[in-house]
Length: 107
Image (cartoon, rainbow, N blue to C red; front, side, top):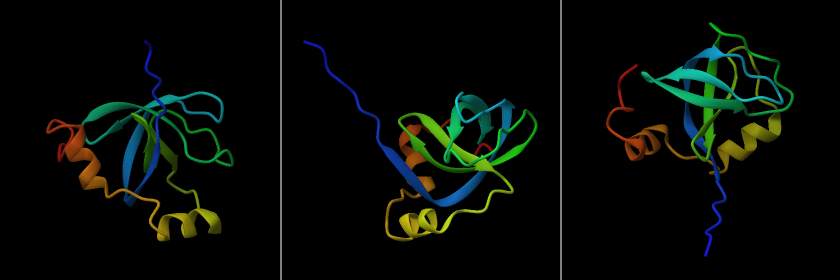
């Protein structure tokens, strides 16, 4: 019997910064350095521009084990602000503690 896994999206209550190591486009995941570890990342919004290696991004949440990011100069659309304000979020500290001690406080 095969089990199906459906990742959930969780938005962080606090935004953090990461640095792009491999470009991220609207159609392709990339790689960022975040809190001392490397993570696959995708753009949190299809309206975001491509981010290149060396750029700083805001880490907004996660989808499964992939981080959701936007360029550091990105302005949140009103509906995203409302969604985050109404509880569609997970405190960053809670999630990083669940991932593992090597992930917490390295940055």
